[in-house]
Length: 439
Image 1 (cartoon, rainbow, N blue to C red):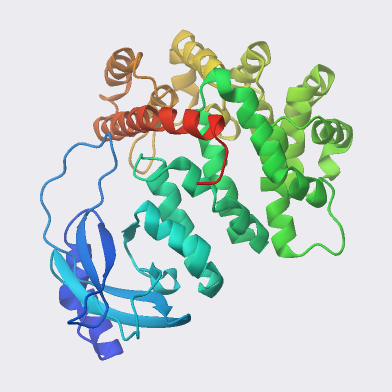
Image 2 (image 1 turned 30 degrees about the vertical axis):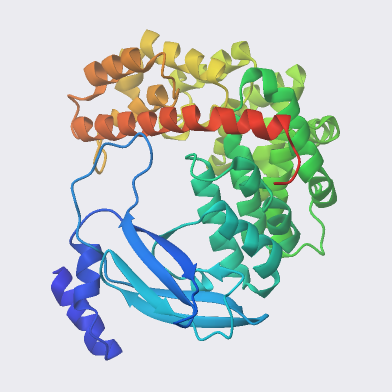
């Protein structure tokens, strides 16, 4: 049981963790912690802490939970040097004294990035960390602060421009974890950028990440580190696949002539860029799917081709789902590689037109949901205007399948959260792209 597990941990660690573990193991959710530095004449500086359950916009109101018992450790400015302090938060509110000669200019409420909680920052707190404390933070702390800031910006709790002001620092760190994180928020915005702002958004992607992507290039070098290898695919796809970089697109078309020889880490990106850039390359790569015997290379082909933007090409790729020469397990998830809403609509119609044949091919058994995961093809549209139509269709089609009721419920909740985020983010995106100055 979970109690026996916690007891074993307590015995091995010589620390009683049973009560704290129970607050995480025996109730749903996770805490969001607010940490505010307080300074007055009568007491030493301290951090006032509060916690609540983290609930994203668009999610249903959850049942009440009791406070988590969670260790909270902070790094802070101690007279120009770095200080650290730890305590246990076991109630809705608490305090942590800071041995400091003066009021700290900045506080990082997640020492080492190891805390198991979300941190709720104010714009002033993030600005102070960025401008005054960044050089004194550990790399893991910078990433943790960026992740929390990024998450808050996508649900309207922090200005988007403020979160994006942390991107250059993450990119400059150079390690694969920081680079991957730096790209995550800008790439996620693609789903929410209005059509009239797409050119400006794509130009920002090229100007922000273009130099790093061109430096990494599409072709590997013997001197490449693991960080470079990992960052290459992410950088190139961000700049070319999202930002539409003509030079990288042209290079991908050339490399696609020998796509089997490309390293696995970059192969799918080469295929995707070439297929959406050159109709001749698309036709050639699509023909290669049937004859490819290696399963890994075949999947790279399928998922690379599925991300094309042309709706006629998308229809041709969807035809692979009913091609009896290809194992359906290699193609059935290609609908989740679709990136543009117009293409997603094509896939939805294809499923509706060929539902019986597709369900006959796609395995009905699964660990939890059988075929009901296909509801995600429709709820991925994230459309307030189409919500009623989508909810009706996925409920009628998938809810009666084994495990389907829960899968459909989760898919609809994910769509509702996406719709709520879209509503919150559009004004932020318009403000950011209209006023690119640093906040």
